[in-house]
Amino acid sequence: MIYPSIDKLLNIVDSKYILVHVAADRAKVMKEYKHFQMNENEYKSKKEIGRALEEVEKGFITVKMAK
Image 1 (cartoon, one colour):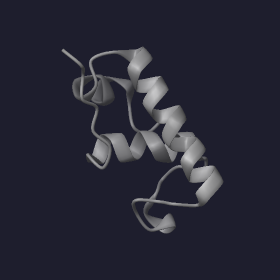
Image 2 (cartoon, helix red, strand yellow):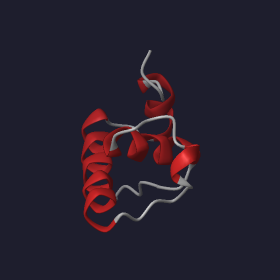
Image 3 (cartoon, rainbow, N blue to C red):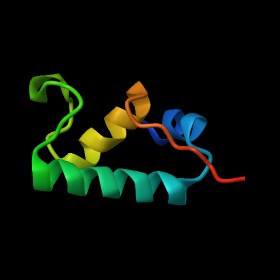
């Protein structure tokens, strides 16, 4: 099973497309600058994209929609 689940993430972010965009941007920052919101041993995922999704689930990354 993939962690975190898409169902939990879609309760936080309204759109799959926005979720993918935010996670991809955050993963690029993680990979380039090695900047993590948590200690590396606290992540369940090994790859940056999974770690970015974990940060979204834990509330470290918030998405604000333009009105």
